[in-house]
Amino acid sequence: MSDLTGPKILLQGDAGTGKTYAIGTIVDWAAAQTPPREVFCLFTENGLETLLGYWIDPPVDANGKPIRPVRPVPANLRWHVLKGLTIGLDGQMAAVKNAGLLNYQALAAGTDPSRGANNPAQKLLEAFANFPDDRTGTKHGNIGQWGADKILCVDSLSEVAQAYSKMIVGNKAVMAQNEYMVAQNNCMNLIRYWTQGAAFTFVLTAHLQRQVNEITGSIQLMTKAIGKAMSDDIPQNFSEVIFCYREGTQFFWDTAPVGVASKTRYLPLKAKITPDLGFIMDKWLTRAKAATGVANGS
Figure 1 (cartoon, helix red, strand yellow):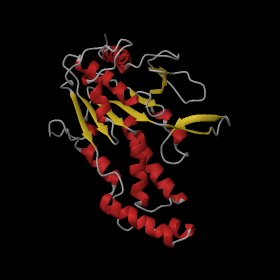
Figure 2 (cartoon, rainbow, N blue to C red; figure 1 turned 120 degrees about the vertical axis):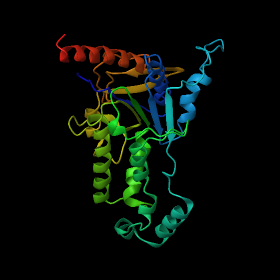
Figure 3 (cartoon, one colour; figure 1 turned 90 degrees about the horizontal axis):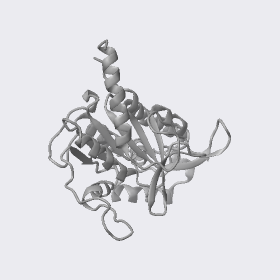
Figure 4 (cartoon, rainbow, N blue to C red; figure 1 turned 45 degrees about the vertical axis):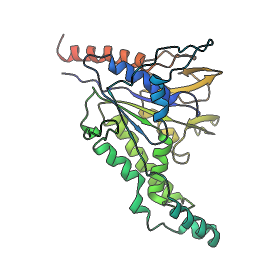
C-alpha cells in the first residue's frame, strides 16, 4: 500500500500577517475527517493565545458581528509550549559583566562553561522524542514514528534558530564564524528531518529578512534563521513556501510574489489567496488516495 507523505508547508511573512492564526484552518480540516486526525502544535514563542482565539474569539465584520460563531477548541488539537529557551537573569548579568571587562576578540574567543546545563536545543529535541500535550498531560511518542495521518505544526523557526545558537554560545555576547557553522548545520539537520525524514504533514511558521540573493544579485526577502548563509537552503526542503501578508484588515497568501522565495505543489500561482490550509490538505488527500490505488493495481 502506498503511503504518500504529508505536505511540508512553510508559512513565512512579517509579524502580524496571520501565520499562527492560519494553523486553525488545518485543525478544522483534521477535525472534519473520519476519523478525526490529530494535530500537534509546538510553540517556541507566545503563539498559543493567537491560535486559541481562532475559535473562542473570532474576528468581526464591518458591523461588529463575528464572521463565524464562537466554538469550542477542537478535541483533536494538542499543544506544547516549550519554555526555558531564554537566558536567565544570572546568565545575562554574567554576559554584561564580561562585555564591560573584555574586548571584542576576547569575547569572541571565550566560552560559556554553563551552556550545557541549559541547552535549549536539547529541550527542543526532547519534546519531539516524546511529544507532551499540555492540554491533557499525556505524551504521544516519538514524532519519527508518526505516520501520514498525523499533523505537526511548529511556531516558529525564529526561536528554533535561537535555540541552536544558544546551544553553542550560551550567554556569550559574540558568535564566532565557526560557531555559526555548527549552529546552522545542526538546525538544518532538524529542518531536513521534519521535511525529508517524516511521513506526517508538517507546518512551520517563519519570519523574513532582507538580504542579497547570491544567484541573482537582487535584494530579496529570505527565510530568517541563523545568520544568512542557510536561508537559501531552507525553501527547497518544503513542498509549499507561502508568503503571508496583510492589506489593511485583510490577510492573504501569495505563491508568486516578486522578491520573495516561494513554491507550491497544491495552490494556484497567484496573489490574494484566502489563507486556508484545508485546501492544500484536500488536494493532498486526493493524490494520496490515487497513489494508494496505483500501488494496489487499481
